[in-house]
Length: 293
Image (cartoon, rainbow, N blue to C red; front, side, top):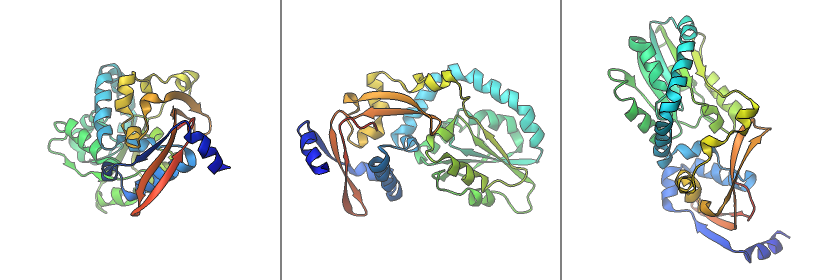
C-alpha cells in the first residue's frame, strides 16, 4: 500500500536531494544519525542544531537587533536576583559555568557582578561557532579571567567531569551555573538535560535558571519566530541545508500540550527523497507532501 501510495504522490512531483558534503562538516556522525531518526520517526528537527555553523551568526544578529528592548528587562531581573545570589554565594572564588551562552549578552551582567571573585569562565554549547561568537562579544569583559570552553550536547553529556576538573579537591571555590534565556526549550529531552546538570552539582553550588511563565498570552504569542519571507529563508538555513524549499512551505505555529512548548512547523508542498551518507552507506529518508516538519 505504501509503494502504491508513492506512485500517486510521485505524480505531484518528488524532489530527490543528496545532502551536500558541507552538512557532514557541521554535524558529527552521531548527530547525523539523530537527525535522520528524528526525521523518519517524528518528522522533527531538534532546535539545538540550529545554533551550529551560520546559525550562530544569525542568532547574534537577532539578539543585537532586539538588545535595546530587552536590555532593561534583563538588567532589572538580575538586579532583583543579586541579593539572593549574594546570600547563597559567599565563597572567595567562583567559577561561572555558562550552559548555552548564546551571544554572551546575558552573561556579561553576571561577569561584572562577580568582579574579582570570578576565577574562570566556562562556556558550554553544542555549537563551537556559538561559543566563538560569545567569547568575541565578551572579550573586553573577560580580560584577565581564565576561559575554558567545551563543545557538548546537553541532552547526552554528564556534567560531573567538566565541573570537577575545573575545581581542585581542597579548593574553597563555588560553581555558579548559568542557564539563561529559556535555553531549556531548545532541548527535546529536557528532563535528561536537568539530570545531566544535577550530576555535576555539589552542595554549595548554585544554578541560575530562567524560563518563561506559562500564561495564555505566552502560549499564543509567536512574534519572536515569525519573520518576513526574505528573513525566513535565511533563518531556516538548516532546513535549506536538508533540501527543503522553505519558501514554498506553509508555516504553522502551535502550542504542544505534551511538551509544554511552542512549535514551529513547515508544511511540505511536495514529496522529498533525502539521500544521507551514514556510516559510508546511503540512507534514504522519504518525506511526504503535507507532512509538518
